[in-house]
Image 1 (tube, rainbow, N blue to C red):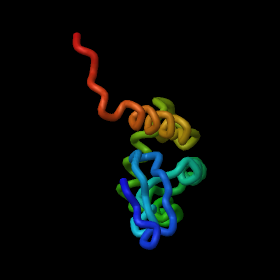
Image 2 (tube, rainbow, N blue to C red; image 1 turned 120 degrees about the horizontal axis):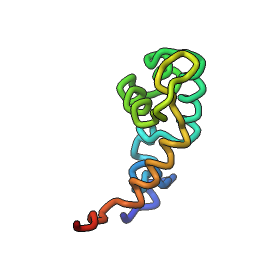
Image 3 (cartoon, rainbow, N blue to C red; image 1 turned 90 degrees about the vertical axis):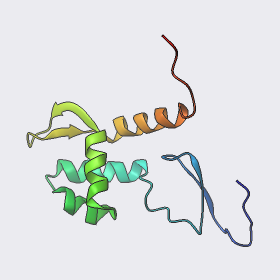
Image 4 (cartoon, one colour; image 1 turned 60 degrees about the vertical axis):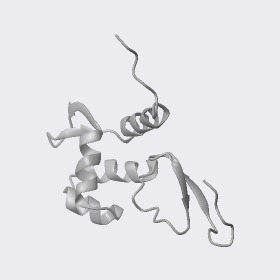
Length: 106
């Protein structure tokens, strides 16, 4: 991607989607590990997904997708599916690494 310095003052790499962002693109849709930790903390404090979404600054649908992606297969202290920010981050990084690779033939 070629960027024009006069138009783009800040360039960042998006770890979730694997491409470059510039200052003219909204960075809010990419969840960072810090935001995932915040989601985990709020979820463990028994907040509802709509309240978590408002606190983190994303849509409720994003929180529901994130909670589904981060399920550990166990139940938390509130008897809900447990969420792990680290598990989600590992899955996202693996997905980015494997992009464009074909599956091995059987």
